[in-house]
Length: 441
Image 1 (cartoon, rainbow, N blue to C red):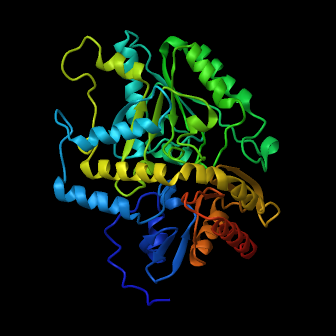
Image 2 (cartoon, rainbow, N blue to C red):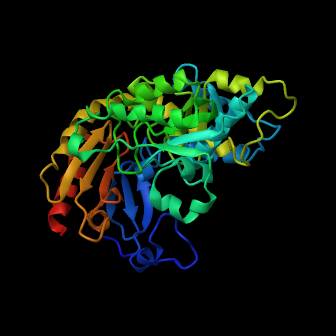
Image 3 (cartoon, rainbow, N blue to C red):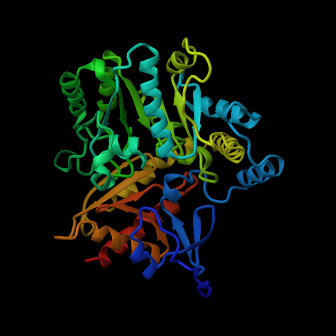
């Protein structure tokens, strides 16, 4: 082990989604990354069990992406996207569209998942207004949903700590479906649980309450990740699609986590065979090498807005860094790797071994559920009395200290490694979690 590097001044940075005081008392610092591993500041190899933050799907430090970004920085570092364009932006949009379900071939670039969600919500509102149904302003999210941290995203989202501080300023015309998590019915399910499709029918109750003519869109994560890996019951997404289509309501899939191979297909839409009207994405679209996001839009939705009667700007929305040249270069290089190395098929092939390894933790200390789909697993722990989340936080810390990076939310440990992982590394991840669980009170 190398000697610990001298720490920088930690006082100025206000860290996101972090217990700042605790972190700065005992910092966990990363210094480098390559392939499946981070290198900590003290020189330890740390196996990346979470693809960074669900985002480094092709593994760290891919030379093709590094070279593409560097080359583009030398050619043109920035180009404005308002009333001007650059070729890579259009090439990147074409590349993204080629991975999307048929018909979702119009692409609006953003810089993050939060921006993608807010963009998708605004597109939905603009679509109905363009069609003469401007009264359709209500948005339907889901309990325990995570849709980023913009005001639109936290309004349709359903994670209480993300909402409560800002509760007086959330969007008013929002309602929520019930979440699908039920340990009594579905504990230790492998893949999609059998129970719970009927929960989608609650959308009919919400529609009856508000009237379909007031509802613009329903937004869900096809597989909810950040809230603790909630797998959709068999038939659930199909029912949502059926109900939204019947009532003229747009269906938005938040695929910030699931797009680009996480479930063994290009999108969760492809994996489940359910096509929404819009897909919000980020993370894996650029392998996280440059911040990037996008919304794939059904052509009819795009055309209703862009080909409407208004002259000039059709959609008053966008970002200074939409389709940033370096992001476009990273997207093109990343998508080329996915296709050339057939990484989605690799993930699909590994999913059986991943499932078996994850469920080997059934019966381990404190474990009350294991659930999985593709290369994602959630290991739910019994909370300590009066200290929810403390046990999972300790597991996270001990795993990191022993050379493994996992994520936790509440008392749920989440595992979502890069798609380049091998079977031995899969076994190593869950074996190490099992060892740590035996050490934790």
